[in-house]
Image (cartoon, rainbow, N blue to C red; front, side, top):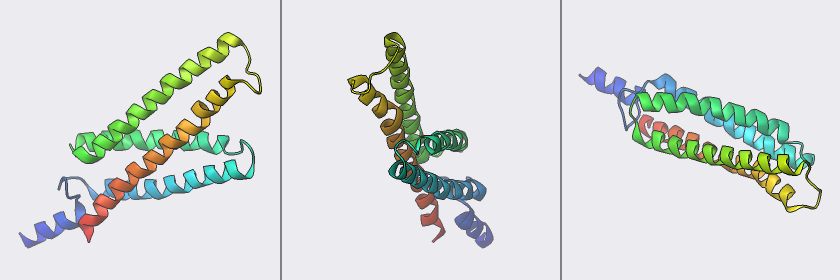
Length: 154
């Protein structure tokens, strides 16, 4: 009995004792890699005007892939806290998709965007600022999952 309790203590999260350790270790690596890519994106924007857009595209693809895996895993093991955070992340992504589609339609109907126009400012907000806010929220999500697991190991 002692060995089973010791095993569960070191190989599971407090919310659900059946979540495997590999999942949390994967989220730990994903969290630190996510922080690195977000920092690289900010540095890219700071160094070159618009220089972070390529890194931001990679960041978005990376975060979507991690979010799909994490959502499936935490839904499968019925862990409410990470799943709730991930549902909120997917709601933000859906809002961004709707805004980006509306922006694309607006630009498509006008044919071009003038340098000083308000559509350009909105496009910068939808194309750069909103995705970075979502990326920062996803760093928070991976941090919460990572910190919840570390609390159970100590």
